[in-house]
Length: 125
Image (cartoon, rainbow, N blue to C red):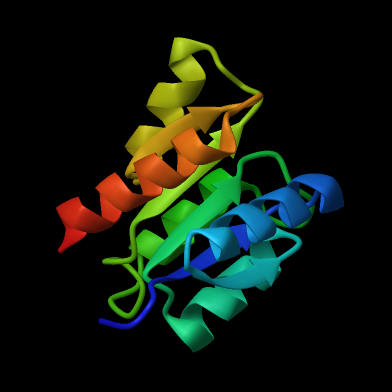
């Protein structure tokens, strides 16, 4: 079975690097994007197995990214986990209502995030 591909969409270079290293250590193939627009383009071109996206980003927010992905047949089946410092219940509901499969708040434990990605991949088949 080939290694799963994760697209990490994050505008903070430190968090992007942290996620990339942790996913690679767990055997994932990692694609990167630094904002929502770039993330949407990479998702459409590469069709990753799962996407982990920040919510607050320039050009296109994570919420806008999820809505755009879920609106297109080519990308609507890709599971998305949102990552955000916005931790209020209303923020989490907004993310899930937009179509996200899970919502992780910052600060986060990288191994916990990887476990949640694995769980979403199992659920999505």
